[in-house]
Length: 225
Image 1: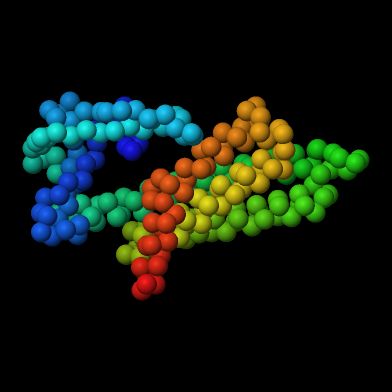
Image 2: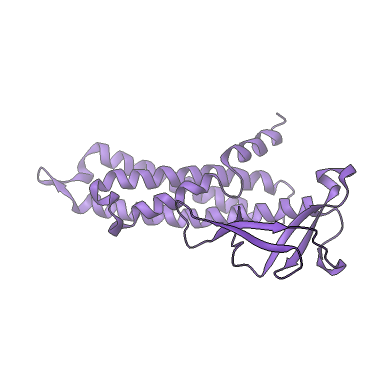
């Protein structure tokens, strides 16, 4: 599943250059241009959400590239991948924080204006407590993202901090989107309010850039498990 694979003019390809060295030291990164003999786009996939980001196959068959296609040094692919994934995870969840803030504002506004039995539904503890939890998740996610972002380029532990931020924030985003839909009730299920689209997009957040299980593996490894 290659993001922007069907439309990209340039692809970053990781390939084994020394099988005896394995992942660390045996993988190199290459920049391969569209139109290179043997390199082409394959099937384009339709998705539940994130429909403005095209995803598809990249097919390689007997592809040969010049030495200047090498990114970094031979065998540095694992390091490049690890550092780029930390950047990617932090940047992605930073946008999740903004999405959660928007959902919270939407839920609060609706809870203030929607009335039942003569009073705003926000006066009902079942609603107000759900919104309070949304606020807690938002602020916890914000701090985790800030912490991870502040350590980019400063510590070799960045992959752990990125994993913590990614795991918590992506799962918090899904929960917040579901809570917003529940608070808005039938309106939340309607296309016009945009919550259903946000929820569809959010569902992928625990899958792309490393699943939640991958993030837990990274965290556990740092704990010596």
